[in-house]
Amino acid sequence: MNEKVADHRLSLNQITTENWNLKEAAAGCAEQGIEWIGIWRHKVHEIGLKEAKQTIKNYNLKVSSLCRGGMFPAATDLIRQERIDDNKRAIEEAAELGAEVLVLVCGSSPDKDLQTSRRWVQEGIEAIVPFAEDHGVKLGIEPLHPMYAADRSVIVTLGEANEMQRAIASKQVGVIVDVFHVWWDPLLYKHIEDARGSILGFHVSDWKVPIHDLFKARSFMGEGIIDIPRIRKAVDHQGYDGPIEVEIMNQSIWDLPGEETLQKMKASYRSHV
Image 1 (tube, rainbow, N blue to C red):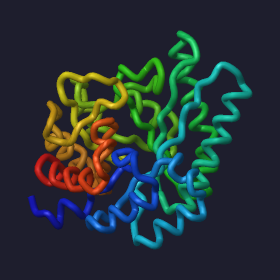
Image 2 (image 1 turned 135 degrees about the horizontal axis):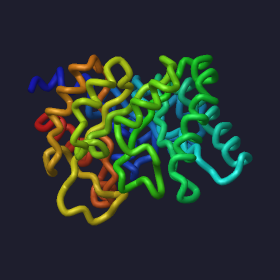
Image 3 (image 1 turned 45 degrees about the vertical axis):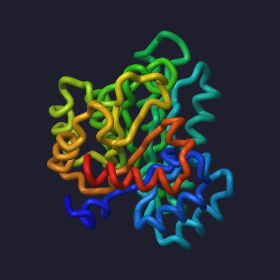
């Protein structure tokens, strides 16, 4: 694979270097020639929005996404409204940082009524669509692997995300395809085809067997069982030509020096994406 072409779309999702603050991550990207960065809100809040924006400008980076919005379901109307308000703040932050996409981790159910929680997710997104449109920020529904349904998201397939996107019927809303979350789905390639024109992000990592930690389970591309090139080809074929975020939650990787993480990330991206 041509390195210049490959690296042109490479984005560091900041959670991959969780041991770094935003300034360190930005400096690392600049040093390694990585043009894109996907930012997490907790890293922005550590230094403040104004300083975060200046940091991105200083290192001449482009922001592939801001993570995360969502978490819409809640036990009371008051809490659900508070979460909608927080999503509006996230939209404002994304606009200030120059991120075209706010990634939505939709949220888990406060009880056993999953269908009601899914309705709350849709209602929550519908409530923030006009605000997102006013700020020029798109909303990316990210389905998570079913093992996260109990604590992170009741939206667990790309098919569900597509259906919700169509039901909301706004060009401001699309979907995120993360290989770690969707690789197992027997209908994956049909769902990717159905998502044509609405894919707002593509995230890569790998599923290394055995998995010892549900959350911090991801590995570098090529170390696991996911057919990443095939999924990438399918996503590209449906018109997505934007940044490709490497998003890895793994304590052993977090414990590495950040410079080493970026070097390994680039090598695995070039060879296996």
